Image (cartoon, rainbow, N blue to C red; front, side, top):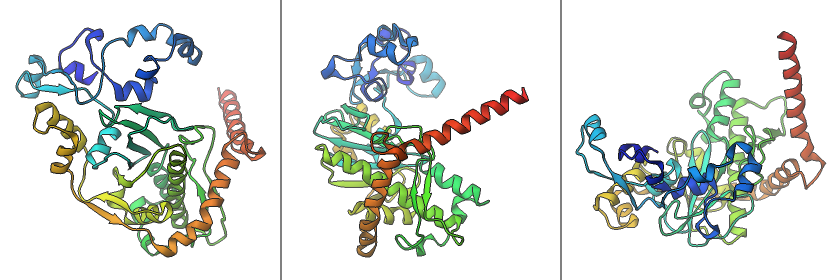
Length: 366
C-alpha cells in the first residue's frame, strides 16, 4: 500500500503485491496456486467471502520495482519524481537482511516480541512454524519466520510489578550465573506463537521461595526466552532447516550483554550481534538495489553491514543448561500441548474462569 501510494497507483489491480506480506499473512504460495481457496477463507471467517478477487494483481519479490515516485509525492517529500521504488516487505524480514543474514542463517529480531527470521535453500514445511515463503526475505531463497509473542514486554512487566524499570532492574544481572535463581520460567505471558501456536496460555514460573526477587525473575525470564528460542530452532533443525549462524538483532541485544551470553550458552553456539544499529539498513539495501548501486544483496551487505560482536557459549553455563533444557522442554509440551497430558487444561481453564468472572462483574456494574 505504501509503495503503491508513493507511486501514485490508484487501481488496486495494478499494485504490485509483496510476496513477503502475502505469503506470511495471507498464505499465498506460488507452488500451491496462490491464495487459499474460497472455501478455506470463508471457514476462517464468513467476512472473507469474495476477498480473493480483491487481492488480485502481480505478486513480486523486493528486488522488483513497484513503480516510480509520483510527481505529487515528490513535491511533498522534496524529492525528484521518477525515483524507482522497490516492492515492500515487513520490517523484521528486512531487518534480518540489514543484520547480515545469509543462507542458513537465523536472526532473532528481539524487541517487544521476537521475530525469528531465516534464509534457507529448502522449502520444507515445519510443523508449528507458520511462515515458510519462497522469496520473502531473500528474493532467490526461501524465507522462514517464527517467533515469541512477547519478550521485551515480559521484561518490562516484571520490572513494573517490581515498581522499577528494566534498566534499573538489570543492574547487577551480569553477576548472575546459569540456574542460580532456582527458577524456571515459561514465557507465555502473551500466549505461544511458535511452535504450539496457542494463544490460550499464560506465563508460568516454577521454583519460587521466600527470598526470590524481581531481579531473579527477570534473569529467569531471559533464560526462558532463550529456552523457547531453542525449542523453535530445534524444531526447524528436525525438519531439514540447516542453521549455520545465529544472529541477535532488534532493539534489545545491543543493550543487553547478559541476554546474548545466556542465548549463546542455551543454544550451544556463538551468537553474533551487529556492532552498530542496523535499523532500516535492510530497507536501504533494497533501495540500493532499486537504484542499481549494487547488483546483489550480498554485495550490498558486504559494503554496508557492520561487523559483528561474537558471544561464545560459556562451558559451565552450557553444562547447567544441559540439565535444565530437558525440564523446560517437558514442561513446555505438558502444559502447552492439549494432546500431551491433562496439565494442558490448566492455563486455558484459568483464562476461561477469569474471563467469566470479569464479564459477570462488568455486567453487575452495568
